[in-house]
Each structure stands twice: as C-alpha cells, then as structure tokens.
Amino acid sequence: MADSVKTREEGRGSSFKDYLPLVVIVVLAMAAGTAREAGTSGWELRMWMHDFMGIFLVVFSMFKFFNLEGFADGFQMYDLLAKKLRVYAYVYPFLELGLGLGYLARWEPTTVYVATIVLMVFGSLGVFRALAKGLDVNCACMGTVLKVPLSTVALVEDLGMALMAALMLWQAA
Image 1 (cartoon, one colour):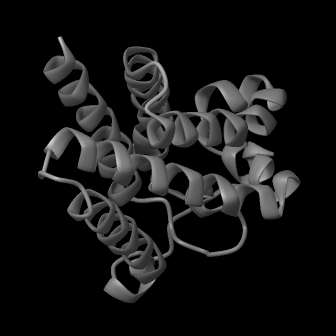
Image 2 (cartoon, one colour):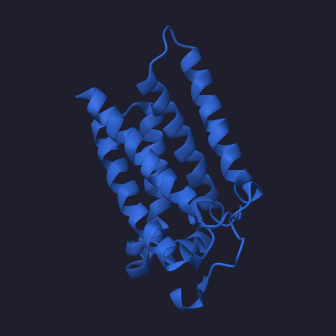
C-alpha cells in the first residue's frame, strides 16, 4: 500500500480551488452551528463549538461511509495506526460519527472532549509525518467522494479540532 505513494507533484495543493470542497463544508458547518446557537436565548461560544464540531464530524464521517474500502485505502497511506492495523481504518469513521453525535447530543461532554483531543492529536502525527516526507496523497478526511490533497490544511483541521475540544474541556472545569 505505502509503496505506491509518490512525492507531491509541483503545484498540487497550491491553489485555493484544490481546497474549495473543504472550505464549503467548514463554512456550512459554521453557519449551521451559528444558526442553531442564534435560536437560543443567549450566545455561548462553547455551545457554538459543540454544534460546529458535531455537524462537522457527522458530515465528514458521512463522506467516509460512501466508500469505506476506499477510505481505508487512503487513510492507510498516512495514518500511523491504520498503517499497522487496517481494521482501525474501518473503525475510524464510526469513532468520528460517535464523537459528532456526542457533541450534538451534549452526551458526556468531558469524555467526548478527551476522546476528540486524543483522536485528533494522534491523527495529526500521521499527517505531519506524511507532509514531512512530501507524500502526494489525497486527504482521506472526505473519503473518496472529494479529492483534496493532504496538506497543512489537514494538520490545521486536526489540531484545530483538538484545540477546540481542549478549550471546551478547560471551560467545563
């Protein structure tokens, strides 16, 4: 699997157009979180983050479920655990969906925050490693439906989600 990975083509991932699908999803998740929070009696950043992260994670898991096998192939190219244990690549979308639903349901927030931090920080290590090697792979974050190159955007996405979870954990304490 990893032997078929090549180094990044010059210019691939350097255009805004390469990331447009990701930008659209993030903006829509932010708008949906904002709409949901605007319908409450008062604005709370933590609740907005809950809604944004819940919507974002559910949508991203959905893309993976469209072609679980294809997702697993792509994820194994750079995720440290999936490289060694393919079953993790099949379990990951369910973990992501579970976290998204946990955020939306406000279920056991501390557990959801900690699980998000662990999952996202660990995931960012594989992304960082792939980027350092200059690998030319698609980000498996959107399954096989949308082709977005793995880049620092994926790293920012993973670490941003971990940071938001850490902020909510700190706020809840």
